[in-house]
Length: 328
Image 1 (tube, one colour):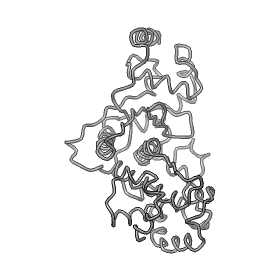
Image 2 (cartoon, rainbow, N blue to C red; image 1 turned 180 degrees about the vertical axis):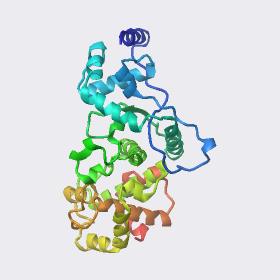
Image 3 (cartoon, rainbow, N blue to C red; image 1 turned 90 degrees about the vertical axis):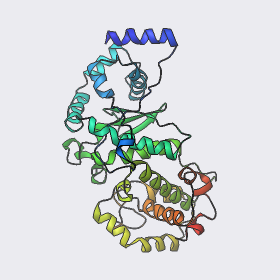
């Protein structure tokens, strides 16, 4: 650990700050192709910040800034020999790290799916930088989060729905704690960072939120190379129910005059993760509004060509003609 402190002081004396990392890093499961020939996609090296912190070895200068930011966010304070030792001795961190390594030990098979996502991102969003991604043991309930242009992936949140310590989570959350969720979650976190829901209207409509969520789902599918069902996180029976009852759900939304309501709680109840969509009933899978939103966007794209970045702006999701143009 003393080696780390000496290095940090040396870097600051020379440059005045710690340089941001050059390589994006990540751990993820083996997932469907993101498109393009594998040979043409450069895999991304996986840097394990969790391993570096537990070993106390931060001699790799690309890990210094991410470690500092993480310590500040997680309440450990300034990164130094003392706080690093406290972190490394934390029993819960060690327990989660051991479990994480049992699932995420082999990093080589995970580098190419993330490389494909980065290639897709650079193609679809050429004016936006792909963030540096760091594998950690996350101290938060949030599994993937961003800070200071860095993206942290809590691998301890992707150990499988049957992992015993997950028992306290409700089932609708626990079933999403699988390796297969990692790529969609990373894609969504990056997209929400760069293209948050930011309506210009003081009182945005429910329709604008549905259109935004639908655009987000389409962008995630194209970035991560996964299906609509995988992005939404539904099992086969839930997806089958939604497809069978799509018209009924839409007619309910229209009939109850939800579309142009400016009730933010109503919008949230339609799109937020939940055991069921309460405004429809307990038989309807949670966040059914996202499914409807994507179906509208899908219909829109069948009729009009529009770049994905534009879909994620108020120019689209607050457009007065978007629904009409979708012919949904």
